[in-house]
Amino acid sequence: MPKLTIYSVDGKENGSMDLPANFADKVNQDVIHQAVIMYQANERQGNADTKIRSEVSGGNKKPFRQKGTGRARQGSSRSPLMRHGGIVFGPHPRDFSYVVPKKVRLAALRESLKSKINGDSLRCVDVMAVKSGKTKEFIAILNNLKVNGKKVLALFDDCAKEVTLASRNVPRLNLVKPLEVNALDVLKNNKIVVTKAAMETILKRLQ
Image (cartoon, rainbow, N blue to C red; front, side):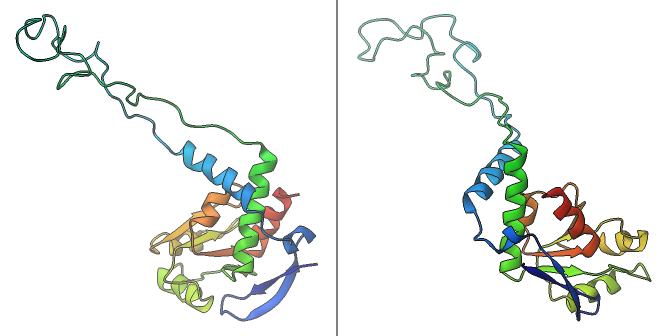
């Protein structure tokens, strides 16, 4: 059964926890791709808009006479063939969002976490405690865990108020609740710091 090393806030190993047997399997890239494409599509605003020929101004009269000019005949200055005319097949406001099955989303979360564990990019801490509530102390903990200086995803379950105060000014640190984290959150950060309680919450979600 695969195991995950647990560290203390000073960066020293402090035991391990068992992971489900499927964490030992090869990372399934296909299921990650399905979920990430969905999350990215759901973030699109979809508010690009172009005017069709009925929406542009002008066009109430024929722009020039039918014959004798050497030009192609035109009946309206709003024609897509004319300068400042309407746009053919241009974008209009639309909703890009869609949903993949819940099992696929959870499988993608599991596989993305697995890829971070295999790449030694995930640090599990027994308890995240910042007694002073100061950012300096929290950054020192990140340095001890060798994750500072990169884009870090922090997953803390029921963390103390001091931890929230100390972490909110750390640059490139994203604090996400374990019950809300998804595969895209995991993959767009270089390193992950997770407490033991938060990891247990995530594993319970993946059951």
